Length: 447
Ligand SMILES: *[C@@H]1O[C@H](CO)[C@@H](O)[C@H](O)[C@H]1NC(C)=O
Ligand SMILES: *[C@@H]1O[C@H](CO)[C@@H](O)[C@H](O)[C@H]1NC(C)=O
Ligand SMILES: *[C@@H]1O[C@H](CO)[C@@H](O)[C@H](O)[C@H]1NC(C)=O
Image (cartoon, rainbow, N blue to C red; front, side, top):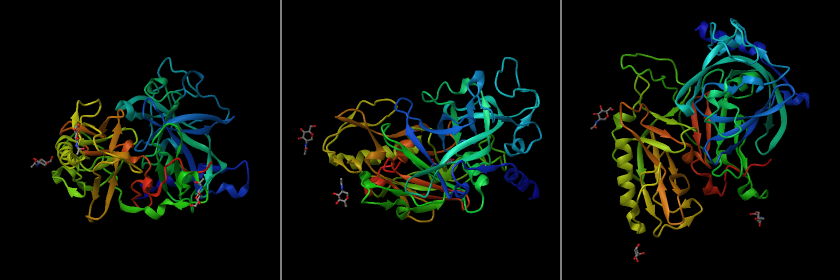
């Protein structure tokens, strides 16, 4: 018990807070980051000011990512407040970093030497590691919020991040310097922020992803109301937390690829327990054993911002499409040739346009313990318009076991214009279902 608590205590010692604007801001209740959708890669990108002088850096957002990493090679990172972490230091132990001579010849980045501790960087966009990242510290600056608009910037010194090379940024959205992980581990952004401010700064965060690349959505850290202005009309105000429904968040075991594991290391990803899927309020037939959490880390339902579309295990996907095709028949549509990456595309027939997107049978994920607790998805989240006449079902076939480990991965298209709050202090997910029901889009937050 004592050994697992030690790193957190050390951690709160060396993190310190500064505010250039006012003393009262040094303990904000909540912080806020803008998030935009990159039209080419469909990645979600945020920007954070770092270093001295403060420079804006762009990061692809990985909900289940464990590291905050960036390309520091060849003068990409220049800051007078940059500090390297030496082996045996508190940041190295918080980061669960290792120490050996990983500073290979040819590496040219700040503080590269044998004493430096490092982690293996996970670039989930390319399916895993690509480089060692040297544990580094610098100042970051993020805007505060009281829940209805962007407030003054708050500085956090000695923020822990990992300096890697440019091999990992090749597949990121144009202009991105690295990735920011929002995972459940200690050095991911949510826990670092709550450790920095402590006290009333709750260990939770909320994401509201925009549906287009034209306007920004928001990511909140800490506790605040979530006040949006439907259609940017400031005389209509809604705190969208009034729409919250809750289900348990699971920290799953990382998949080890072996079936004899009794308990592996925790995965930084966020999981929930879906027990069934409905189309037009009618449950479809799925193998419920598949959806159970297994000791090996398999099973369960993961939420992801790096998968553009929800992926379902083959038999679940097949059952969903079958039920969807049956329900949509009354719309007088016909199935047309698939348009990659989608497998199920339709002529628009008599589907009308509604405030919830194109009018199609709704799809709902039902959570454990309560058949009336479900996350409902309408056209805006279930379909993608390919042309004026063709729309595709935005649920992909992930393949079957043993190729895949998680039978349901809820992807970014399904998260758009929904607010999801990940409460790490009480292991609870709060979700709104689509905010379009309130005529709110994630971009309807005030700058
Ligand atoms: C804003 O909302 C108010 C109250 O619902 C309404 O009367 C007004 O016409 C709206 N303004 C615009 C520009 O839509
Ligand atoms: C359901 O899934 C489990 C676990 O993957 C599998 O062992 C079993 O054969 C499946 N049952 C059916 C009826 O397909
Ligand atoms: C259904 O679609 C066909 C051709 O796509 C059309 O000829 C027919 O009139 C449509 N029926 C209805 C009821 O809309």
